[in-house]
Picture (cartoon, rainbow, N blue to C red):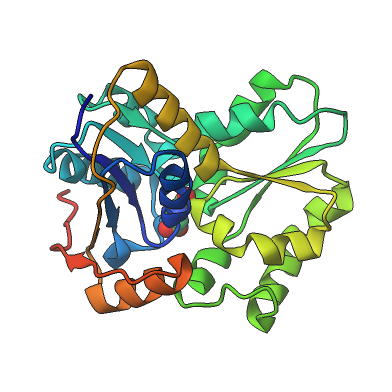
Amino acid sequence: MDNRAIGIFDSGLGGLTALSALRELMPGENIIYFADSARVPYGAKSKKELMAMARQDLELMASFSVKLIIAACGTVSSNASRILESFPVPTVGVLKPGIRDMSLIPGEAPLGIIATQASIRAGAFRRELERLCPGREIIDLPCPRFVPLIESGHTGEDDPELKKAVEDSLAAAKEAGIAALLLGCTHYGLIAPAISAFLGEDVKLVSASRSAARAACLRLEQNGLTGGSGETLYYTSGDAGEFSAAASRLLARDIKARQLPVMEIKS
Ligand code: DGL
């Protein structure tokens, strides 16, 4: 039994997909969510910047005395895996759990991965899937237009700007006849209906956020670390009112986030 909270962080709204998945699995846990909205999008940052930001995000989470941290960010998970793995508080990223679930997709049709440009550039999603599914064709695509659209409220299946971005970004995946698509950026779960509408219901969408939530749940259960009172606190480095409004809309519940100072990267 351990009543300390679970920390979840992302660059913005995307990690809410991991939070929702974890809430379903573990309704009694306390959760602290941090959205680094002042610095979104992470996908446009360099590896060096992402490593520094990952460290800051982890230290911020640790300052809340959390028992486990979910890096609900594919960009951090793929660019700063060593930092996550060597951090003194146990961490779960979205890359390995997502790829593990993806590797279970049966058949021989190609497998698709979509993620931010920094994640695709790092190559870690592709390498990990190639290792688990040798010989299987993999299509990995960066989707730099998605996060700015999602952060500015374009999440509806029929939103014309989002529809166009989905068509342009996923044309190659559709052409290749993929069996499944890994949503390697946690933001993308928020536009899953628009993605499915374009690719068709036969293409299975694998949510790396859900995979990470399951991995976190298992880890806590196996180590006897479950416990809490079901409370969730939200923090953002961006505008608290804006984040609260967007998160309340997406989670369909009233959320009041608190503002934290913007973290600087020291060179
Ligand atoms: N949601 C994050 C990810 O999973 C970051 C997206 C971004 O800020 O570019 O990669």
